[in-house]
Length: 315
Image 1 (cartoon, one colour):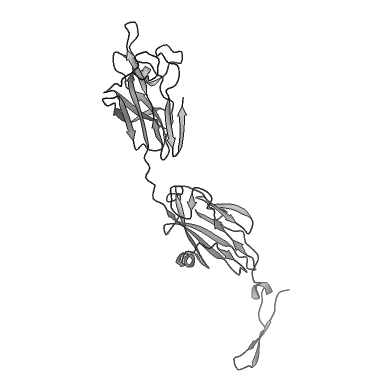
Image 2: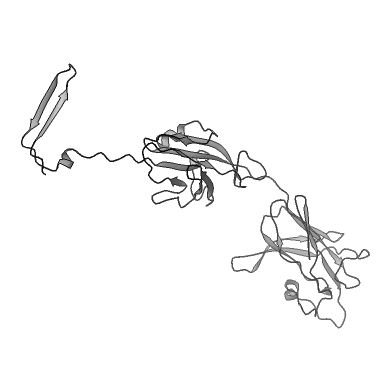
C-alpha cells in the first residue's frame, strides 16, 4: 500500500520524546524505509612478490597452490584470478553468511614456495598480511601464522607475501672426445688416440624444430672438448666434417640439460677414409644412416649424465 504519511519519534539528549509526522508523503514504503541488505562477508586473497602485487609478468605466469581448511579444498592464486571479477593473482571466496569463519594458507609442499630460499624452492614465504582493506593488509606486519577469521562481520583481505629467491649457481657441462677409431668399431678403445683441432658443434632446436647453432668447441691436443655453463634445455652435439676422414660412431641422442647436469663421454670416432669410400659431407655429419652404409658401428654413442648423486648411462 502506498504510504500517505509518516510518524516518527525521536528521543532527545535531555530525555524528552518528540513526535513528528509528514501528512503529504507519497511513495513506496520500501523506498521510504529501505530494507537493509544482509551482510555477506567475502574474503579476498592476493599474492605479493617482494612488496608488489604479482602480475603475469613478475610471477612468470605461475599458479601458486593454496589450501583452505574451512572447505578442505585447494585453490590457486593464478594470472587468471580464481572467480568472476578477480584480477590477476586474486582469489575471492563466495559470499558467506554473517558470523562465518574462514582460513586459508599457502601450500609449502611443492618446489615452488618454501619456508626459506634453498636449492629446491623458487620462492620463500615471507608471511601473511591481513586487514579490513587491501591497504590495511599490505601495511600489516607479515606473520607466518595461518590467517583464520571467526565471526566475520564484513569483508576481509589476506596478502600472501613471497620473496623471489636468487638462482642457485650450478655448473652444467657437456664434454667428450674425438678419437681415431683405428679398428673402425665405433667405440673408444684403450689404444686409440684423441684427434686435436676438430670443431664440435652444440645445437638446439628452434621453434620450427630445426637445429640451430649455439656455440662450438675445438678439441684439444688429447682430442677432448667441453661446453661449460650450458643453459637448461635440450641439445644435439655434432662434429664438423674434415676431408679424408670417415665418421665411425653414430651421432649422440638428444641431451637434456637441467640445473646441475654434467654430461660426459659424448664421443665421436673417426677413421681415415679408404680409397673406395665416399667422402663424408655436411649431411652425413648431421644424420645417421640407420642402414649402416657409411659408418661401421650401428649403436648410439654412449654418454653419461650426472644429476646430483645419480648417474645415468645413455645408449
